[in-house]
Image 1 (cartoon, rainbow, N blue to C red):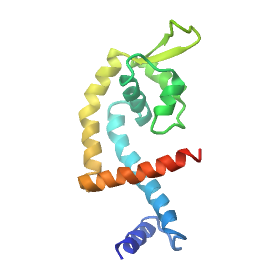
Image 2: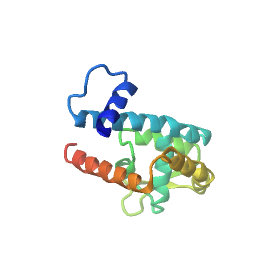
Image 3: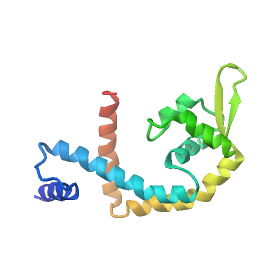
Image 4: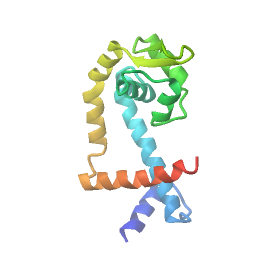
Length: 163
């Protein structure tokens, strides 16, 4: 009966009067609500760093690709792919965190690379961001966290086939 009380708690959280039509409907809304709350809570340490979550995500992606990446590859690796990557990269270039470099092999292609200043900004913020990640999910045991990732990956894999 724990499932029913969790679904009732979700309905109350959302101020919902009608019953959910299916457990899957409740699951989707629970994931969306949790994601919205996580996003809001994570915005604080990012804004303290003078970055948005999307900008931080671009810097992390570029740190993992020191050879540089074109903007379309950056976009495909982002947590939220709807963001305007060109605008994000423009802003990061203005701040000196990213540089655009013309590819020697194909002069039509431009690669984005993280600069030493961008690496320093990531290093300065890493502890606060890591702490936020662990503290926001601190109510989950390691097993629960693994189970949550497994279930999320099941959804992600399914959703990729529908997009």
